[in-house]
Image 1 (cartoon, rainbow, N blue to C red):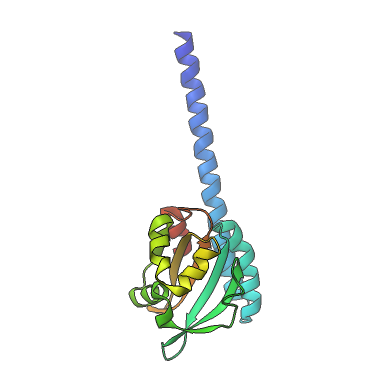
Image 2 (image 1 turned 60 degrees about the vertical axis):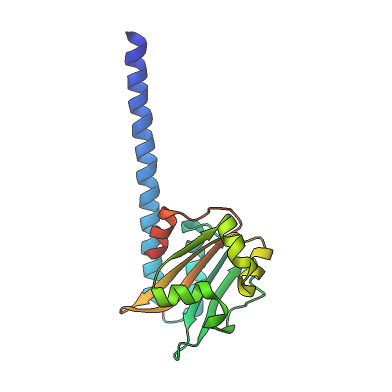
Length: 178
C-alpha cells in the first residue's frame, strides 16, 4: 500500500530529526560544561569566575535564583559567595549564616548528596523553616542543591531555585553534578 510506504518514510525522517535535535542539545550541554571548566581554571579571581559562570549557568540550567555557598573552615557556618536572582537581597553575597539555620544545606553538606524538592513537598517543608519560608514567599517553589566536592570533601553547595514547579529532574541533576 502506497500510503503505508509513505508514512513509513516520513516516520523515519521524523525519528532521525528528533534524534539529531537530541544529539545537538547534548552537544551544547557538554560544550557549556567544558566552558565552565575553562572559566574555573582560567583565573584565581573568584569575582571573575562567578560572573562568567553565571552567564553559562543561565543557559545550562534555567533558574530564577542561584547561590554558591561554601562551608567555613570550622564547619559551623556557611558563606553565600555568590547570590543572583530572585530574593538575592535577603541573603546577599558575603552573608555568613549558621549551617544549622538551613536543614537543606546541612543535609547537602553532611550527606554529600543532591537535594531536589518541588511543589507541595517543598511548600510543606518550607512552612516550618524560616530560611526556606523567605524563598517560598518570593515564589520559588523548586530547589536543586548539589554539593561541590574537592578531594573527597564537600566544600560547598550550588543552589538552584525556580518559580516553576518540578523544574529539576534527573537530567538537571546530572548536569548540575558535572
